Length: 214
Image (cartoon, rainbow, N blue to C red; front, side):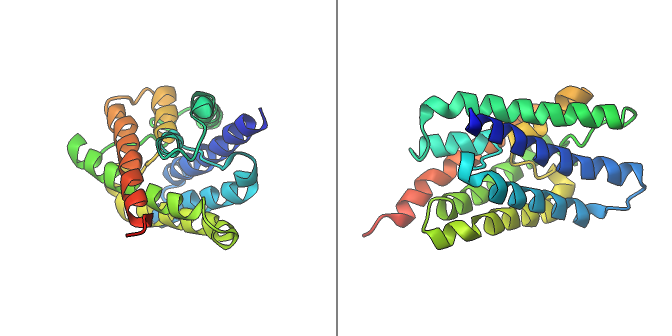
């Protein structure tokens, strides 16, 4: 149960701070800026990994949990409770933001700036790179573990920085599902559920190929 509470809390923090930065940027006429939003996402992921990583692994993301299960680095029996915990945390965060900013139309939902397929391909590649980094740093030596939060948070910041204006750089079905449901902006939701899962799972065979000795 501690693991599930940790996942709920961490995903709540991720969605509350990340999408909260988007909302407050809109409400304040751009005071936070796109760069500030990217930094917020990267820093909250890093902070939650250091705060909760030793309890639950700080997945904070159904696509990450699914990929870990496929890679056999995570007990498949815990997959559904982890995903439920992540979704509940994300929905609670969007609910709080809705109460705080009732007039905001999207609540930080991820919406394609171009076509759905453009955002789908971007989300697949972004999550592929993110998961490749996670697999290599989250289950390595103690030294790697100490820097896991910095590496993973840095990738989230980097990818949000350059791809955010086009696809939203979600890389996380829970982060996209919650604001979409609470705000009612579900027109492109399938992109942000399917693409991150596909991208994360695609990273698993490459990870094993690269680590296997010749």
